[in-house]
Amino acid sequence: MSDTYSPAEAAERSGFSLDTLRYYERIGLLPPITRTSTGHRRFSERDLEWLGMLRCLRDTGMPIAQLRRYAEQARAGEGTIPDRLALLVEHAARVEGHITRLREQQERLRRKIDWYSAMAPSAPTPSAGREEPTAVGHGARPVPASSGAAA
Amino acid sequence: MSDTYSPAEAAERSGFSLDTLRYYERIGLLPPITRTSTGHRRFSERDLEWLGMLRCLRDTGMPIAQLRRYAEQARAGEGTIPDRLALLVEHAARVEGHITRLREQQERLRRKIDWYSAMAPSAPTPSAGREEPTAVGHGARPVPASSGAAA
DNA sequence: GTGACACCTGGAGTGCACTCCGGGTCAAGG
DNA sequence: CCTTGACCCGGAGTGCACTCCAGGTGTCAC
Image 1 (spheres, chains in turn red, cyan, yellow, green):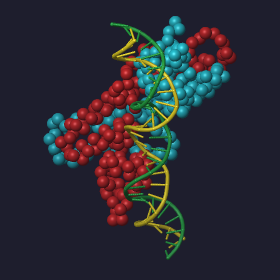
Image 2: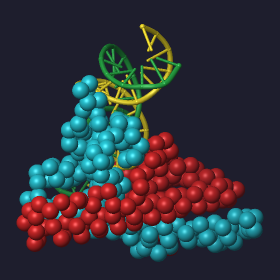
Image 3: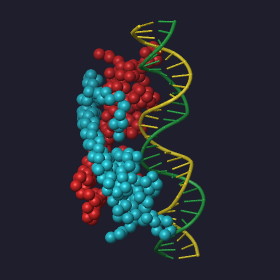
Image 4: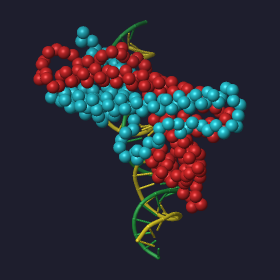
């Protein structure tokens, strides 16, 4: 218990680079990390757990700014739990949507690949008017790019 | 047939902004778009289909540089079909991996949300030593960030 | 023919999330 | 002691993918 980790270990275990760990601490995604008497960081088990959460949220596309709000709330105590809950629920919904969109596009990709596969090995310039399936499915996406629905 | 579209229509149908369409033409993701006598672009049905493909690949995280190679090959004729096929297959695999990772993280997120839900409405600072499930599952990710496995 | 609006160009600017740098300190084995 | 490698800091730099700008031309309904 009460194990601590060097920056290098923390980096390895969290998957963030050393620079990123320092950066995260600077911008407040991490609490001030405990230091040895000579100023070297020592990451606690708790820090590592928190890094795991950050990893999860970053991997699912949460922007730094939002992460910051979340970190702030987490530091502010249990009164913010409803806020944090709302934030996570909303995020999970976005992730869900993202996965769905990704799957649709993956399906389209698959069709294109099938078409290429039928093309590549056997048919040497058949010249038959077989159109490329570029426009398969999805009746366009008329979203005027206003909302920040990217990632 | 042989419908054409104004830049605004092309933007609406493809979901790219006008600026992005011009940018894409400049960097060679789009072939030189047909112009009216006065220099205004007219997008063909074919252009729109190609834009749909670009949309699919961008949405699934293919970087511009790779898209460029793909566009180049597409312009180079049918001899490049095996290359294009390989590129898409590889990309589809990456997308698959990405979806998988996303689902894992989504699951973790769900557990965290459950925990917060149990916390928020009923328990007013119970002070019981119930640890946050930040570290649930996944025995860390010891990847030293060397390969470009992000996105 | 005139006002409103769409479109043109090249180049500069933006936002995000890191990543690198240089110059210095610390820790530990031989 | 001395070297080697991990670590410290603030700040500058990078890469990506757009996005905006200024100044000018086209189009079209009224």
